[in-house]
Length: 226
Picture 1: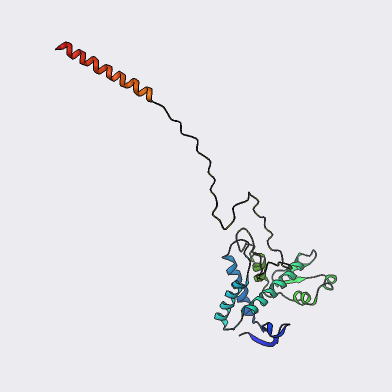
Picture 2 (picture 1 turned 90 degrees about the vertical axis):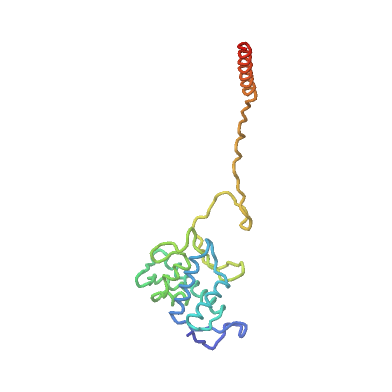
């Protein structure tokens, strides 16, 4: 069970106390978010009401009594960790050991890292593959966790995306503009060419006249026989 540390963050009683997370609880949270993300639409963002469902799942599994704010804080902690990890791996010359999950960094670059990044990258990275799949949409075997696009991750309900790691790096559709998503799409079908009308009035008239002529001729023939 997660235990409280007995301290609050920053502004006292206005924010909930921090808790200590066991490794199995953290892994459950990350795995839950990964599975939830796979069922969502392209371009999905984590919002607080999604993380509230995660908090409920954690409480059912571990009886933690964890709150939305605590899950949101823990989620953001690992999102920030991934930013440091991705930046380090992308540096040319740095080497990543995908078995031990360790980044080998040049000594000259270590001096440029802040304390948090230095502590994170100086040892094997816990939950590396879970973070990779959750925050880039790519699983350990290289397959995409979601179709067409990776998910952008934002647990804040505001529209402020400042400081977020840009994950939406796949090509977007560049076709013609469509109707608004809240309206039904308009179906545009080409008009059918008018069906030509065959006028057969004269043909019918001539046929009727021939039939009448034949009938009259037969009637005259019968009259002659009488």
